[in-house]
Length: 68
Image 1: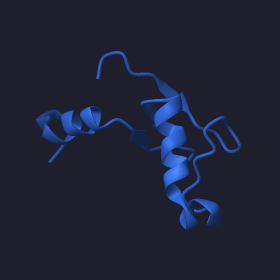
Image 2: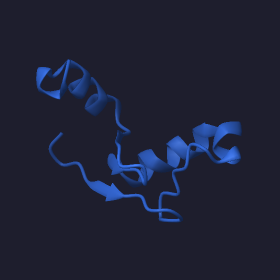
Image 3: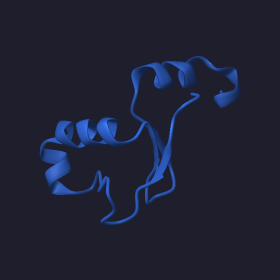
């Protein structure tokens, strides 16, 4: 995943990623689009990392080093 950026998505931050928000649950696709447009890898307020590009997801899913 060379060339990717990690962004910390804090509460009320630039990305505003909150999967518990009713607006997100009603229409998650606009939020996913904003994530893809602004960052490729992000850290959520809950501490997990999210990956937004298909090729990066494919790499992670196929790499043995990312777990079993």
